[in-house]
Length: 528
Image 1 (cartoon, rainbow, N blue to C red):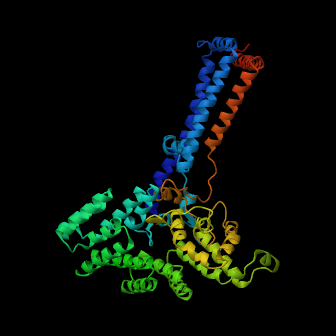
Image 2 (image 1 turned 180 degrees about the vertical axis):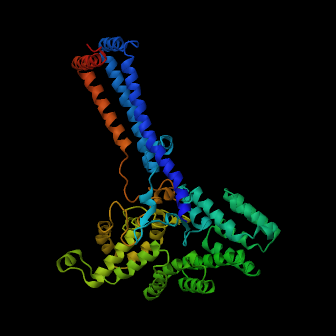
């Protein structure tokens, strides 16, 4: 093992030595250039060239300087506008990104990401942080129906609520879970594989009908029609029941199990949307008992939302006790529902003025701590619950701890917070206190891992372009935006002064050029 570690360290040592030597080679090369210029000052006639350049500058009129400074101000202003637009769209500076991505490797620089991907263990050793799982995209457990809900939004507003990236992820999910293995591929399965990959909704619907013509018991085709062609929830429920009828004919193994679970879950969601909430709760409980190993589908989040609608808070607490475990991945639904239950117990009598005089009671302290825990997990949610930001339709996929998850949670749970008297008031008074607990600049978290830095990029892919993505923590303006802003302002000021006071600025430029010429002549004059 010792020999292997030493062998693996040789390339790193070589890279470090090359980077170190490259820095000194550049310094030596620069010193040699200066020495050669000084030695060859007479053959190159540098003194005569500097004198000629000084005479040329003295003959220039103030109009030239106005044009020069005005052009410089215009160019730097255009660069500033482009940099600002790029920063607003992608969250980084274009110049800095090009420098880091293309120029730094050529100069032998090595990007240091140790602070982002490593953390110290108890014995002081450095371990790799599981950053990949933190930025994993998950299927939204409460995603809407495309034909009955998303399409209606498009018909009314003319805007597309789903991005191509989001729909492409859904197509990959359907293709993976709903079609048979390649060895047992049936003709209708081959058609459905192509149907999920189609970008045009009408082409997908036509392919589904083609699969039904090949086999009128193709359950996956009815699922696609229920999701995309049905324009009402009632029609979608009818098609899902038909898919369930044909899906239970075959033995529920492998891909058929995934399809069966999906159909039953969507039927439960149809019942929830049509007001048959108790029936939906029973269907979800039966589904969780029948397939206990499919916890990754997060069916308990559908159950929590339905129980909150029934105001069955004791049942909600029982579900939370089972799934709000330290060994299970958290979600905004888990954290904020736990905070809602604790806030509901004290929010109806909570007063900030009274609390500041007498202090917080034990129950109030527990509620505030639960809110702080939820806000640390996902800091984007409170602005949607407090209606400080406008809601949009939730995407079909979410990023945990990201803005997409916040939109999805608030879209379905805002009504439950409003129903609990005073809960939103307690949230309004206490949620910002979370940021005083979290260390800055987020090297480590308080109750969770540090907030990942990859959420903004993924959320911009998942959420539509007309939505302003919430960013945490707020990014400071890049250096090059500040630099170009200063350069633009300075050159614009010089252009204005030269235009208003041409004689004074002409005298100033001549004095500066004469001073510089004298210093250059002094440097290159032969020693006596």
